[in-house]
Length: 106
Picture (cartoon, one colour):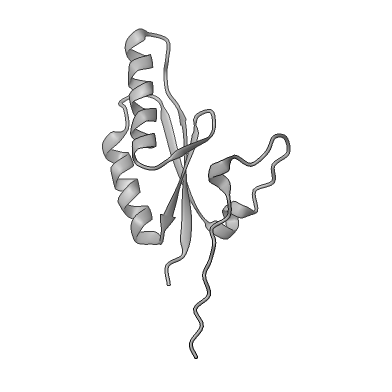
């Protein structure tokens, strides 16, 4: 059985020049195409089915990062992610809990 996990990507990218804004937009688009959704501004999250999937997506991240700025990655289990306290605001549609199916053998 695989354990669902989430990858959280936190980033601050320079956006002072037109080229820097273009690079930052390309990175955000890269994240969206790879299945991430925006949790908050500059915080993106992706659901993964097990540690192998996490490692694959971390490798993709390393290939798609820009040359400047700050990018951090945190991997948590689904249980840890569900324990996030929301102090202000509400859960967004992508944060719905994962439905676990129980197998029954007769």
